[in-house]
Length: 123
Image (cartoon, rainbow, N blue to C red; front, side, top):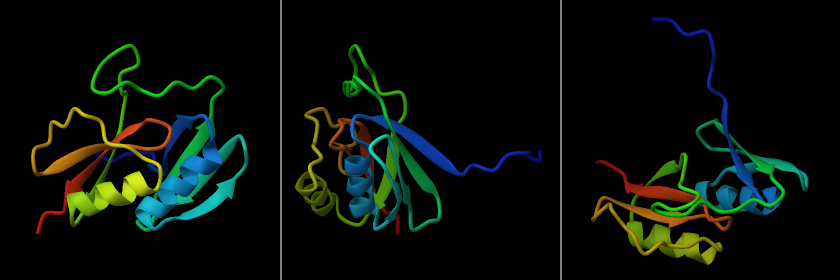
């Protein structure tokens, strides 16, 4: 089956787009390509874009369930889960208590509270 659209980006609602763009640029080695109080963008090394959209009154998702469950999340390959967690928390992210991944992946959160996974790179 042939498609008619090309996937170019994912958009993430947040309270402070510049801060979240800087966080994900540091996590991925990407480049902030657009930065205003209302919206920001990061070009990932893979060539894909992540856009951040300011939302007044934004409330972080609850993990793993609750009033505001996650509706989507990002996954990243890493070589070492502990080093990735230390880097993320050093950038202002967090680590929720609930961890369903065992030793293959870890759930972390960005500074706005969005959960994402770091997954061990398969060799």
